Image (cartoon, rainbow, N blue to C red):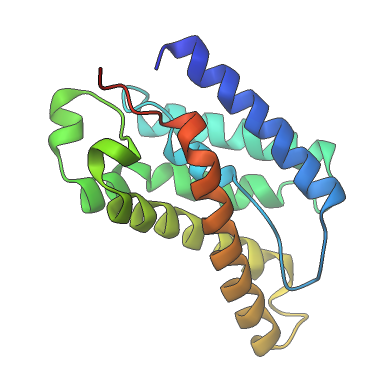
Length: 170
């Protein structure tokens, strides 16, 4: 995907995340977020520090323009950016880095894509739930919130993935 096409899709999905955060609070057990997959799909040529800066800015914009604690999304999203290279290497191997190409669900396989998305979503959700009130809520509430949010967030992220990581094969 061309650079401008990726960043246009990134900004549109950020707008979608803002709408999700502001208007789709269905239950206290569920927090919908597509931010982890957005960070996971940042082009490979952008290193960990650049990805962490982009993740911080994305998280802060989300926090500023939606309800919630200021810095909470940024706090949970920056480690996802820091773990982006290890997640990609673990799931897809090193050939993406050798070829310098971004991952695509069709090219790399659906199940590998599901695993990478789930890992990114799990890191984000674990940190978000822990920082949002682990000391003030019972463990079982946080565990249920983590599980429900992980499943729903992964499914929503997989639905948004084709706009961020399209198949570039001819």
